[in-house]
Structure formats: structure tokens, C-alpha cells
Amino acid sequence: MSIDHKATTALPTRSRSWENLVPHIDLGRGIRARHIQLDIERAPKADLYTKAGNVLKLMQANRWDNIAVTSKGRIVGYAKRTQLMRAEADQPIRNVTHSLAGGSVISGDTPITDVMEWIAKQRVVFVLEGREITGAVTIWDFNKQPARAYYYLVLAGLEIALADLVRWRYGKNQSNLIAHLGSRDTAELEERMARDRAGSGHGDIVSYLNFKHLLRVFEKDRALRMELGKYETAKWNSMSKPLGELRNEVMHPVKTLVGSVEDMETLTRDIGNATELVNRAIIALRKKYPAPKPA
Image 1: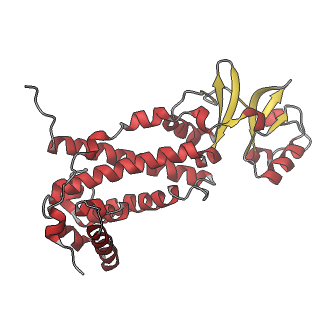
Image 2 (image 1 turned 90 degrees about the horizontal axis):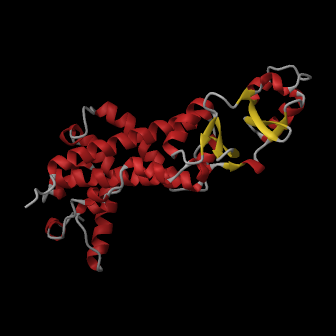
Image 3 (image 1 turned 60 degrees about the vertical axis):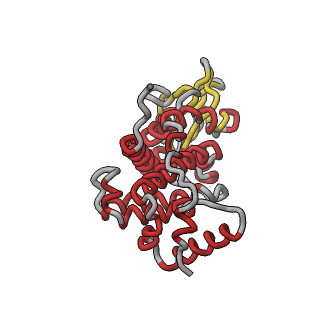
């Protein structure tokens, strides 16, 4: 089977979907620290004068990396498991407690984009509502549904923007895209298009490309990559491959996405790269499709 060029190019081509994208900064503001925090009532805690050895056993048994430290029922700081492992077992944890100064406390209104930056530095932050600490955020909270929704929206925005750049580049010659895909992907694409033509579905060839296909087209088309900046093949592949993997992982919400500091660093890097590509793609598209001048 081969692509029916006439059947696809005669269909309407949507080339302005990118204009409906919500700016990245607004996506980040929509999901805030309070939406992903662990409520402070459920957070692990230990009194300031509890012996380090006892706290360490508790943390190791529950695989906690950090624990909130209290004094007279109020949160006064936190302790790290790595430091407790080096502390004398009989000494109180107050000797290894980090105070809440120096960026350990953030507002509940803090956008998730900023929370990701804080966690990269602090590993744990406490969330303040008014004058009360209401929760804590660690790397594990970036597995929660609101956080995953943010990752999906960023990646979906990238997919839309890349697709519209491909539409601009290939115009009515979209059948030329097939040369960039492998035989297996081409066969799947042809099957889906044939099935839709037999029913009531319709769309141009680009509308049948998934995220992996789009990344592959950019890999093979240097002129298209240059619309986003100086992305030579090696640089593009080193950045795009993790993005393809991230999209698959985000779409499987029961699978742990962040389970270590390294995972958090990788996620922060990949979302940052995706955001940069979205912004670059939108800039390129605005040049291709300038806003109409007022009458």
C-alpha cells in the first residue's frame, strides 16, 4: 500500500493550531505548590530532641530522604537521611537540623516551574499559606496528577507547534514526509489513513504523525531544524530522544516518573528543553504567519 497523495492533500490543512497554545508561563501558573504538596499532617516528623539513631531507623524503614523537625508541635526545620547516617546515634537531631531560612519555605502560590527549580537545589521545601506551614514538597510529589498534567501540556504544545512547522515546510507536498519514516511506521500510517478514508475521518498527512514521527522528520530535515536554531543532528538527537521517552512515560500515570534526585534533574532538563523548543517554534511560526494588519 502507498500513500494516496490526492486523497490527502485535497483535505483541509490546519496550519494555525499553534495560535491557540497557552503561553508556557501561564501553564506554570495554573499548577502551583499547593496542588502537589504533601499535607503537613501526613508528612513524616520527629521532635528536635529525638536521638539521631532512632530517627535514622524510621527513615530507612520508610525510605524517607527528609524528615520535618518539630519543636513544641511546630515545624522548625528538617533533617536529611544522608546526614543522619554520619551523625552519632545518641545525639539529638537538632545537631543536624536545617533551619527554614535560606529558601526552604515557599508560598502556596508558587508556580510549579519555580517549585521545580527550588527542588533541584533544596530537595525539600515547605509550603506556607498565610503564617502557617501547610505542606511539604519533595521529588516524589512530582509524580502526582497535577504535575503530570503540566508535563503533558508542555509536550502537547510542542507536538502542535512542530506539526505546524512541518505543514508550513511541506505544504501540499506532504507525501514527501514518508521518506523520513521507517518502513514499519510508514505501514502503520498508511493503515490508519486507509481506515479513516473508508469511514468519516479526514485530515492531512501531518495529522496522522505522532510525536515520535515529528521528531524523526526534524532529525532528517536539516532546514526544518534550523528554523528552531542551530540544531545539528547529534545535538537534536541528544535532546529529542529523551523527550520522546518522557512523553510515553507521562502517558502511563501508574508508573513512577521521579524516584531519585537523578530522575528529578533529568525531568527538569527535559521539560526545560521542551519549553525552549515550543518558544522557538512559535517565534518561527509567527514569522511564517504574521498577524494581519489592521484595516
